[in-house]
Image (tube, rainbow, N blue to C red; front, top):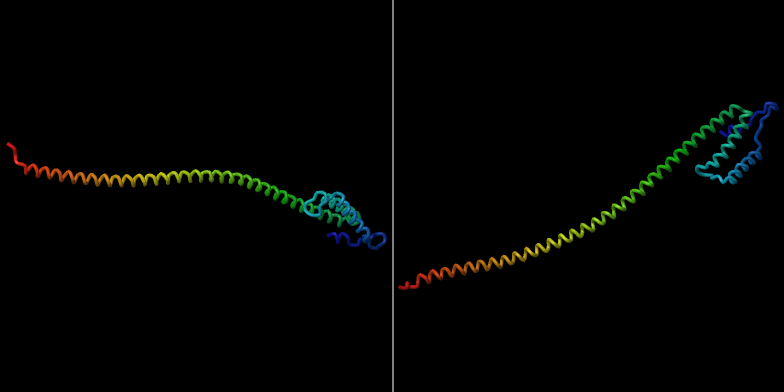
Length: 186
């Protein structure tokens, strides 16, 4: 678009064409670069200083071209407005993406804190449950040992009871035999 803006312009008085002098264009470019350096404008990303400088330069160009060629001036104004809209849209997208990133970062930090607290609580509960399981395992083993000892004692006692019952029965049988064999006393 700027090439069409810099096309030779017919001068009405002389009937010839006016070409911008190369040295004048180089001087404008050097002046623009010097001003960018002095204001410390960034050459990449969104930079309000660079935006201000380029807007001022573009407005000067529009005024200069608009004096001689009003149609080209109108076209350049439209181009400027479209470029401004595009830059504003990009700036909005950039700001919203930065806000989104900040929100997600703060959510992640909060979630990490919650997860760390939850992890420590779960580790404490695991330790407590491990101690409880060990205590219950020891209790089960001691109860099993006691039951085994009781079973052995019962077995011994039962054997003694059976032996004593057998011995009692034998003694009663012997006593009844002895009573029958003993003559009655008169």
